[in-house]
Amino acid sequence: MKILVAITGASGSPYAQRLLDNLDPRQHEIHVVLSNYANQVIREELPNGLQLPAGVSAHSLKSMNAPFASGSNPPDVMVVIPCSMGTMGRIAHGYSEDVLLRAADVVLKEKRKLILVPRETPLNLIHIKNMELLLLAGATILPANPSYYMRPATVEAVVDTVVARVLDHMGVPHQLVARWAEPE
Ligand SMILES: Cc1cc2nc3c(=O)[nH]c(=O)nc-3n(C[C@H](O)[C@H](O)[C@H](O)COP(=O)(O)O)c2cc1C
View (spheres, rainbow, N blue to C red):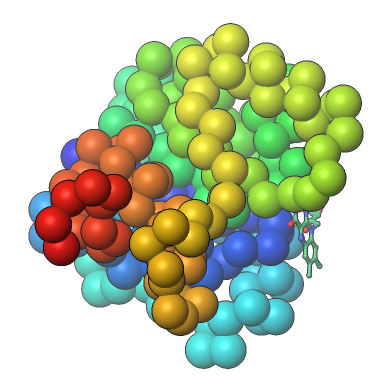
């Protein structure tokens, strides 16, 4: 698969790191783009910074030379993780002024899979209305809501409960987290 991972300035950069850690660049073509504010939050949340696995292609936000800026070359799946309310609103309303937003627009219009992993609480009506619009346009909204029924013992294991659901929706097989009612 051709996969685009977009990282924004919402809290939750460990989700992006763990997703990248669990995508194999030998099996997939993996691209990464960061919003203007992503780096600021990454500095607060990832002590070693974002670690891009070898083989992953990083793109500048301002470069429209990236393949996925055009409907002629869309990714199969785009994941915005974590997704800020700002980016969510801009995608919902068709802003396409940088390559992250344009790629999301392309993915929706080309009927590929757009998975948004928002992190915000509480939600206001604008957030909910934007989510409604995005759902109607075909996006998947997969909030960064960890689960606890498999008793995750570390922060990473908590993070992985969300990343496992993202991988499920991407169609990437994994054994990151045990599944309910299945022998481990
Ligand atoms: C430490 C920190 C944590 C933040 N957490 C969130 C968050 O969880 N959700 C959110 O929507 N915005 C959050 N923000 C605000 C966004 O970074 C801000 O709205 C920014 O403009 C988003 O820009 P972007 O969508 O281009 O990344 C946070 C900002 C900082 C500095």
